Image (tube, rainbow, N blue to C red; front, side, top):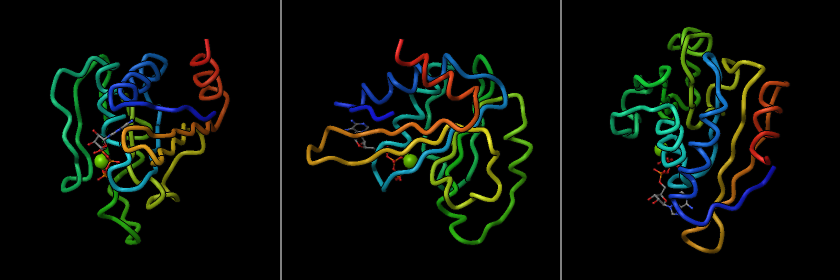
Length: 149
Ligand SMILES: Nc1ncnc2c1ncn2[C@@H]1O[C@H](COP(=O)(O)OP(=O)(O)OP(=O)(O)O)[C@@H](O)[C@H]1O
Ligand SMILES: [Mg+2]
């Protein structure tokens, strides 16, 4: 499913809507070039999970944990690049919270089979992004279907 996001606010709103459909242990992966909007989208997820704290980019910490309706584990694994270091991903992916992973391709072998893969792309217009949702597994297919309604 491909959606046009015409402003950072629209990107956050989509994140917020998706967050309302998530369960503990759900994993969302985010791909997209530098500045595509991965963290912006994650801010929307956080807002949908009723996280009160300000979301910052976790580049130097890899994982930041936020308290909300359920925990949010915000990861940016860009720094791991090809090192394939396992920092205990399973604890997060099978934990009680929602994991959102920027640059998830770098840790592909550690990702669970069931997840929502999201790709954000630039367009010719500097304020417009295109987002692709690839649900893996029936739960995420249902999440994506519910977004239509
Ligand atoms: N439609 C849009 N959706 C999201 N962000 C947008 C949009 N239009 C413009 N922007 C701007 O693009 C930037 C996206 O930055 P953001 O930090 O979210 O990207 P990122 O993908 O997380 O980058 P990085 O790879 O460095 O982590 C912000 O400055 C935001 O205001
Ligand atoms: Mg980011």
